[in-house]
Image (cartoon, rainbow, N blue to C red; front, side, top):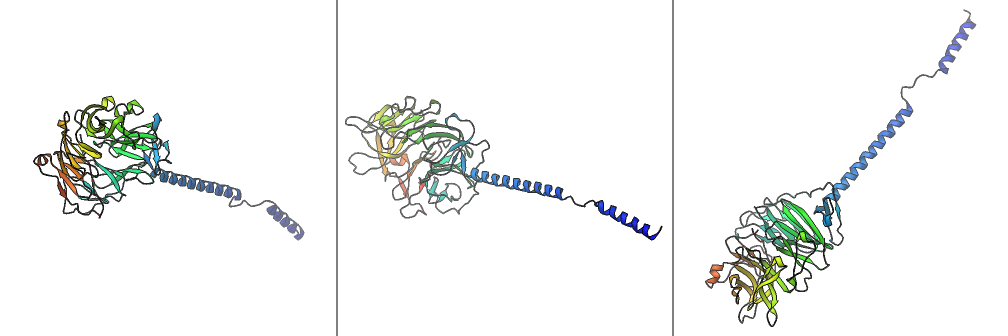
Length: 410
């Protein structure tokens, strides 16, 4: 082959190599597609994570309450002002996290009843528990050593209901309510939320079997008579009503002249104060819950004050404020309820009650007076002419008063 032919063949070979491109090691389009897919996945996962975090945070700010007005599902009440609270079904309720136990060293002085002093719960038989809560207005023992139900003092955001366990842990059951009433059994609670009254059972650390009904603007729950909720249609005026969950709306019935209800007898009748007699004056009375608090018996002759009071577990005694004879100032009276069929017999026992009264299983009454002292009322000693025993409660701030925890009645 001549040199010209060799040169021509070489040029043709090189031309074919240039015309046929070499395969690329990386596909730019595939790379771009894969990168875009990865980016979309990252964005999707981030969005899901943010949504989940928001859901958890929102759920923690809610409390399981129940279904008002027959709606199905598990409704929730948002913490805050009850006028702004909303109730909506939550298919997957999230329980509020429990707060770990916090305890204080036991003080040297112990009473036979549980007390709340400032922000400390002082059980009669166990070490003190630091609550870490705001002011407590009322406190109720839960049966079977289940702990305590604490009702917070009213605030701009409403009232709270907190369960404190025996180990010191606590769980908020209710927040933002306009008013809260706890049964003396410790097994039921009623509250006002917006334009509705609600009632629920307390089982373990939850509110269960919630029922709600529309209510007048001024109506508030104040207690229980048996399983019925005791309601004041207008706290500024006389009158009480009963709301039975199975009966729908409240039924004032015979309770229009009732000034106060202090408890129930073992047979179910309520002990209260009504306006009766001529001239009209406050008198003790037995009320029939089956007939919407109709008066079945009255006992006039005592000057009974409208305010706190409680009936002993056996139904024999009523501890209440009032006056006997020519006494000018009201004080605490121990009333023998067995004498209601005539002029009731009452015994002065000490300074006036200023808050809750509790009766122990041994038949001893306890209350706090205006100076913050704890008084013990033993009927046998009172009948012997002895006044109530007063004890100063250590740790009470000047001007402050401890809160007596009411015992769980059967």
